[in-house]
Image 1 (cartoon, helix red, strand yellow):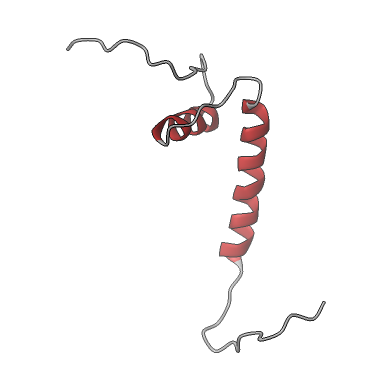
Image 2: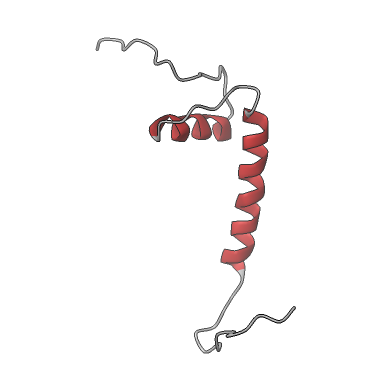
Length: 72
């Protein structure tokens, strides 16, 4: 196999799995993530994952009526 030259996208040496996923996803959609911003992006991704887990973990029966008007 031939080796491919390194791309111009930032590489994170010894990246944690979350960091590697973020860098790879950003690269796939044509974005760059500055190394100084990566810790904040990782933290925000973890926060959003916890929110998504809360939403997905909430059992909502099919018989629930929709709320037509929001009243705090």
